[in-house]
Image (cartoon, rainbow, N blue to C red; front, side, top):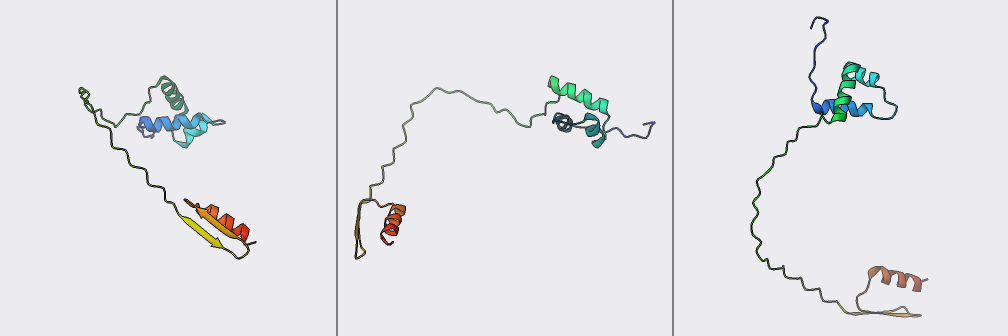
Length: 119
């Protein structure tokens, strides 16, 4: 270039990032353009392109072919049998009190009951 400036190519992703910086509250387009070494007018052009949807990012995903087949009856998966409830009895004799817990004992419940009896 005649003025010594080098022309840089910016991807749509880079342009979008610069434009999105200008959208933040209190942002100065001139300061952001200077920080990225871009002419302010260029940033305003990118902002217009952004609003028109022209700075979309190229997708790297690929579409795959799909075939629709007739539905076949599918057998439902067998249900898991519920675990049998464990039944039991816990007898605790503290001398001044006796605690009997029947059935499935919740550990926190047992701790709370014992703590209150040991006071």
